[in-house]
Length: 337
Length: 279
Image 1 (cartoon, each protein chain N blue to C red):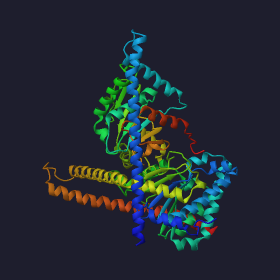
Image 2: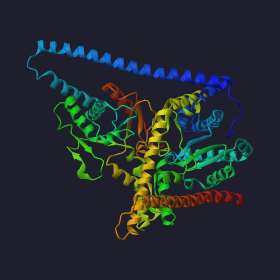
Image 3: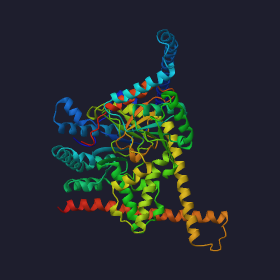
Image 4: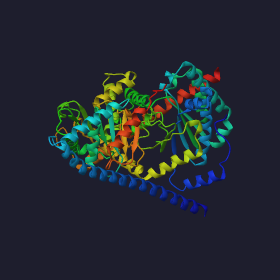
């Protein structure tokens, strides 16, 4: 079963897709693909068969997303908490992942045709080395593609991701690339595994559970959340349309809430910058205690902001370089083997 | 040409959906009014009936209050599991303090220890004392004078302990705003980075437990087990991203005129949720 399924929508599906597309469409959709095991139990098939069908459904859903002009999809494939499952099941899932990522490598041409870029988000170090290598190869070989994006969260939890971002910033401070006062909401967002993606507009969880289970907690603060009772392997085009309809109904109030949040974030950044400038002025100049006038204070602020942004850009460049190298090195290792 | 047709159909579809939503809302209020009427009639008839039977009763309202209290307490015990911390997330433009206060008092009466109230504009946080007064008032109204049993601790915005208006420790009520979410994580990150800057700590020491303990100390309360979201917007609206890892979300259409039955059926739904914690 391949990653990108060829095939067109039926006439009625195409018609509905076109009607939906007349309204605001989500650009980035995230899925918690829950219900594979319950599906297997319901159909009285092996658990592994449920997971396999779940993967096939993902391939189908990706095609629907393409048909609906949704260019970015993020899926929760394997949580760090899932390592607690039975050894047999974990091994089965690792094997499935290895098989699917290897398969992906055989589909280069197809991926190139559609311009699919695959990213894997998570703490890959927790995985067996052979799987790490296959993943790295898939990531490296699709890195340049830029038409659509598939982010696979593997060995992922959101708290782990946030903690990792804090660690990266602390590393930047240690290396003297940034100052601790440069730490901000925007910078933290840029240090997450998902730094190259916009926040998802829509998050869909199947199988009727109504919690986020440590998935994209930071990124979905202002996303539309849709909980659907259908089990993942039974997910249909119409379920997806229903979720998009929900998103469209929520579009205006969510946009308003996002704008308010952006405003507050900018305000907080300005306050932080002002504080830093005031501190700098206290330390350096004006020993005579004369308060500087408004204009020169504004100039100080502007030059401080420019310096801060330069520091942050330098740090983010170094971070990206380090992450890229991790994948390149791993992929090269396989080439040798 | 086709694009115009599609847009026209889309507009009709959305007009219908909005109409459906408005109708549901209208029916809910009608139903509620009807229930109120029934109750009012019952309330008018019952004292008459009672007065024929026994004359030495305390007074109907005091009796009713204690009855209600016992019933609500028993309701709480009848559930298989009760959340330790319930958050009331209001995703509506108009805020009604009395309805919020009712919800908080019901939470306390069924035996929930921590209640937080959130809106994404920080209105409750700014009007903390008004909310607090309203809760005390509703507590009197709904539960009678038994304020020793159902006392409330209000946690203030500041982190200093002396700022808390402590009445007792039966239930803790806290108003939360977006500032308790991402900005509090950023602050924790800044503090850790400052420690690294001063060489008090290495970046390698930082782990989930460290961040978790800093963030728990900043809110003073356990992670919410249940969020009751009121209003049509399907989003967490910036609510405590770090703390809602395992939180169950249950949506109710509106907090305006919300009834105890609606509230309790949401708790019943929570009681049936099974958490597998990754397994």
